[in-house]
Image (cartoon, rainbow, N blue to C red; front, top):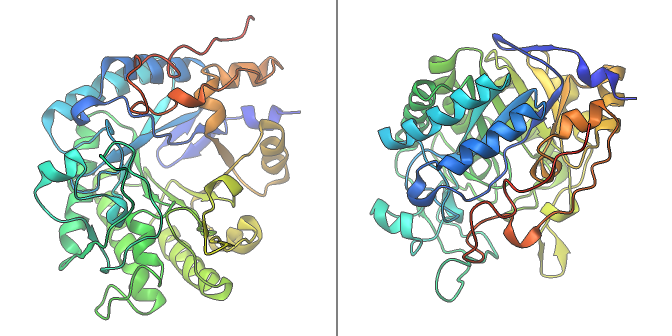
Length: 377
């Protein structure tokens, strides 16, 4: 039933061994923003478990842009050295790994430890706060604040490019631009969070400019080994536009991105768990990702993400509707996920919800991270 997933696929200059990628998953095991040794074990487990392509957890391109405690960065040599241990281990285990480059924009908080160390304001396209938020690692657990509108977005484009240079030095096979989930790229795209009147805001073309310029900068470093992740339905982090505006914006952005010779474009479909409710109404603009955007992808490989089972993914791949899938949550709980799929073993590990992201208590980094059992083969 899943044989379609077990054929190699060329993405960019690489050939990955199967059609199932491990999606980026925030795990909070990098104290002081430095990748830790237990992260080497975590990624190695999943490479040995058969992931065709691993996309790292979100990697911060600068101290400004921090939402979570213990999230890794890639702006200094110590971080590069930590990531090099991980990429070497993943390659030795037979897999490939992209770094997901991440800046959270307006959903950072000025009192977060790393943000305070940055010594600069929380930047976003416009001085418009997201609704909601709950910073559990800050006293009083505050919500989101009004950000400072970045004066010159080119400075942020430069940060992404420098991060890509560092990612290459760290041995990553490519980079994925995090354009989903209401973070900085999505904030520029969405007319509710971007009300600029200069070349970076207003029209669909102008709101798309920032993401496109970042992608161009990344391809200058990695050539065709650049992926893009988008979640047009919105919802999370107070994202969402009316349907026609959503379709117009993301079809334009995806079409223009696809002209840049990217390795893949990853569409994240609507998920209830990633939606938010304000004033008694859900925030997302629910629509079908493949029906809405499939025709806009003509060059890059097309991946789908969002609660997809291996069986559903195999059917979509076999039908030619997509080239591959990304699975997230099940990779957390099943380090040998693709071996299980290949040998028809159930995905039956129970998630340790309390310890998915370190920082909710003071337990060992290993708990809920590297302690999930593999199946008996």
